[in-house]
Image 1 (cartoon, helix red, strand yellow):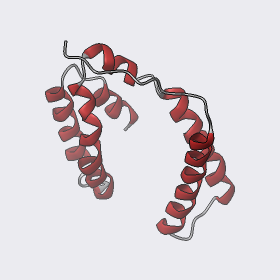
Image 2 (cartoon, one colour; image 1 turned 135 degrees about the vertical axis):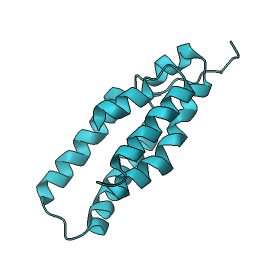
Image 3 (tube, helix red, strand yellow; image 1 turned 60 degrees about the vertical axis):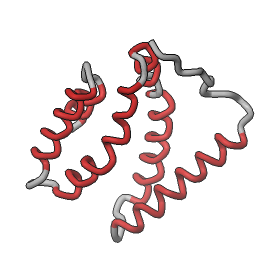
Amino acid sequence: MGAELHEIWNAASLAKAETSLADLVTEYRDTAPKLAAWLEKNVPEGLTVFTLPKHHRRRMLTSNPMERSVQQELKRRTVKVRVFPNEVALERLVSAVLLEIDDKWAANTKAYIIKWECQDP
């Protein structure tokens, strides 16, 4: 799954990314219908990055350190629980952790993302 998503985000054009996404959704529709529906609903929003100039898109791919720290914190908190009674319980814990992280970022005065103007190529 990770390799397929990587292929979508690194596609040469929006059309190729959309084709790869459609193939991925088709591949998972029978074996993991919830995942396929989620991909179909949510991934196209992330494809708007293809509307940016190429040099801006390259910069957008560098958020890995921030994402990694969030994922590590989510993993740390969910591993302690081990087994969740249902999906709602998992969503509740993950939402609380994400809100906590957001509060820390909002209170921090450091600028992690530099504002830049988008100019037509």
